[in-house]
Amino acid sequence: MDQIHSKNEWIMPNTGFERITAQTGVNYKISDKLKISTRINYTNKKSDNLPATGYNNQSISYFMIFQNPNVDLNWYRDRWKKGQYEIDQIHPFSSFIDNPFLIAYEMTNSVRSNNVVGSMQATYEISKKFDLMLRSGINMLDEDRQQRRPFSTANFVRGYYKEQAITDYEVNSDFLFTYHDKLTKDITISASAGGNKLTHRYNRVDSYIDGLVNPAVYKLNNGLANPQTKVTDKNFDVNSVYGLAAFSYKNKYFLDVTARNDFLVWSNH
Image (cartoon, rainbow, N blue to C red; front, top):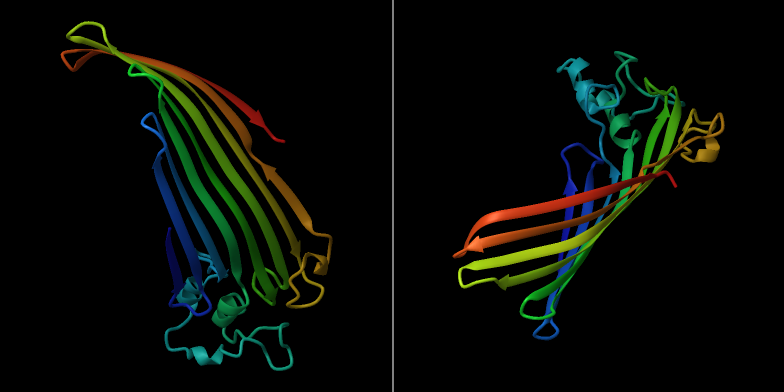
């Protein structure tokens, strides 16, 4: 098993991420006719703050565009006005651009995610002319996100809090039956028939409150109004059957025939 640990602390304070990746693979020959191979990759990623980017007043880059270069950043360092801790920020020159230290330490975007990618394949030689292959793979993601905005920001005067829970997985399985033989001394045939089933499930729950009762208390039960919740489902299945045949003359292919049919089924449950 291979394992890799990464901890990235970016130039901007209170930002970065930590990631652990582990992977393993096995190739095993059970008998002369049966072979099995597997591969699994796991990734855990977490961050207390992935900074906002783009052209908006919740990003450091936006502050730098509008601020004069000769302004001392230490004037902003305390973040909150005296006697107005967590209530009214320090932004002496413009109420439109937020305090950069407030952006870095208070306006956070955290994430916790786990991702598994795995595959398994088995091949069995039924005879010298017939082979069977079975294969399956999975890609599964579970991720939780939080977005926090304190009092006194340009976009959210009374604060804001949002939670996201995302589950996304896909399973892809298929089989392939292959026949290969020499019809004559010079003509060889190879024919295959198989089927595939793809299952995709995506579920996301977004819950947020616009306005906090108590400053810096980031819970869904601390809203001025009831939390707003939205559930998003994107589920579908694809069933496929396919076949192909190839003829060769003196090891040079001169005819290929392929057929495939897919059946797509959407579901919101």
